[in-house]
Length: 467
Ligand code: ADP
Image 1 (cartoon, helix red, strand yellow):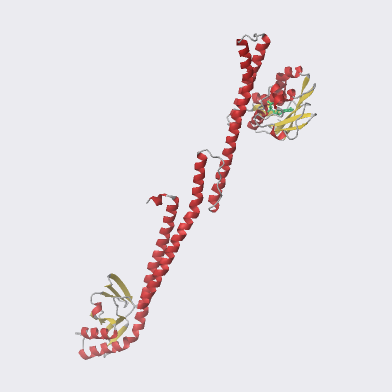
Image 2 (tube, helix red, strand yellow):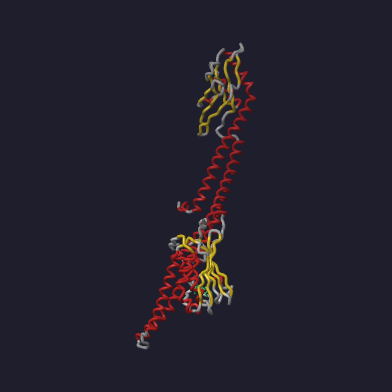
């Protein structure tokens, strides 16, 4: 019974059972109908002998004045003609039957239909004879009896019936075998793709994320296989990203940690003295590490969709001024002026702390990439249901080929240079996540040697109708 626990086994069993039941029922019904029709035909053909017998029976009645003792005559007649005979009197009472009908139950209905129930060849059969087949009339023209004459039932089936049964047998056997072969083929067609999917899933479970399956086995199964392939590809991509992320994080942490360790060890060994400058440099490295860890945590929260955004109506001007004030000192050190310019009435729906973080990250990048003194502008405008905020610098610019990648995690256009400015390549990916968490978009335009413009949108409710 083990086979029936597999999908293929069940499919074969199901289709085979269906074929067997359908073909079996058809075989039984068609055999019965054929037997019945052949017998009916025999009965009709046999009817050609009736007139002779009718006369003989009528003669008997006339000669004897009653049906008493008619049975031996009926028997003799039946034997000679190869018939089964039943004779009823004028009151429809069974009067005489030929020998073969004596063990049968005969039932004559008022409409003249005779039902014969008897056991032939070990099985009970029931036969309906529409009648009376013929009426035996007496001398005065009245009805003396009804006579039923049928071909005798032989124990063996007649040759036409047997040959028909043989051809039925072979036809149905052939159909059943064909049905079972079809069942096996259909089961294979359905189960092979499922087995392939299972094997692929097992391979994936054991760590092989490159496994793919060929879509086969009909529309639904092919769709399932395509879905599986898409899932495998996504898992593969995620796994790649995870590995890269871990190695990037390790790489970013190593440099400041190495600096701190070397500095501390040389102090321990008495090679250097802990001067205020050295302690300040150690503090700076530590701050850099703390900053990196904060950034990583923000990014992890945002990517997990767990960043809490407490969106409230807030004027863009207020956000821009707060961000500019925070960056003021660093800008001044580089001879850069921060210019905040825009409509005071533009209000966005945003989490103020996060919105300032977006602007601060963009301003920090802009300041870091200014090569000579100049202006950095923060401007904004309202279009439709959103506000577009821009941070425009006149710094180094970004090569066109790099632009599409700058929002990726740990991506830096010039790694060695950014290290010196304290960037780990996380600033813009955090910006992108924060903007997306507000339901906005962010993009960059840039030209090398001229400067860059970073723009992002935030949802902005309709301005109140001015009085
Ligand atoms: P980082 O922390 O290194 O600044 P970001 O994700 O903020 O990382 O930026 C990615 C890269 O994009 C930076 O390394 C820098 O090369 C480039 N970039 C970002 N902003 C600017 C800008 N305003 N001008 C020129 N290059 C920029």
